[in-house]
Length: 147
Image (cartoon, rainbow, N blue to C red):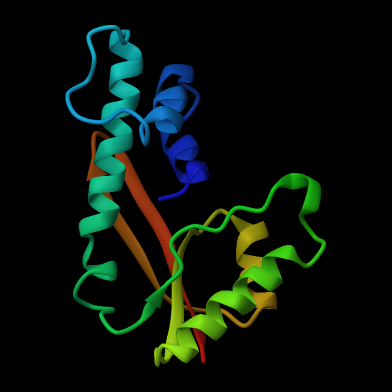
């Protein structure tokens, strides 16, 4: 799951947003030094990751396909071909390993990313809408680049 998804699902709540960012670095039981609001943010982060990591879209259904899990381009070098180079590298690696395609998930509202992925050969294969609990919904496209 990417940082943008965590920020989006946290809404306007600053503590949930901070929890979404630091959630990858706080392991095990939540330390008592966290405020209750920040602890809720870390718990939300864990719930989102747990859902995404065990979701059938990336466990059973797509076994045998190469999944691009995260792709972040620093704003200073966006729109300069860096993303395309990274995608080309991933696709070449997947092809060398014998995979028929590369897949990824992207939030349906992330039009900028969707446009970039289309530019580099990805097409929407299906949509996934899942209630992950506590009023949060994962509303994504599964995109595929055939190799």
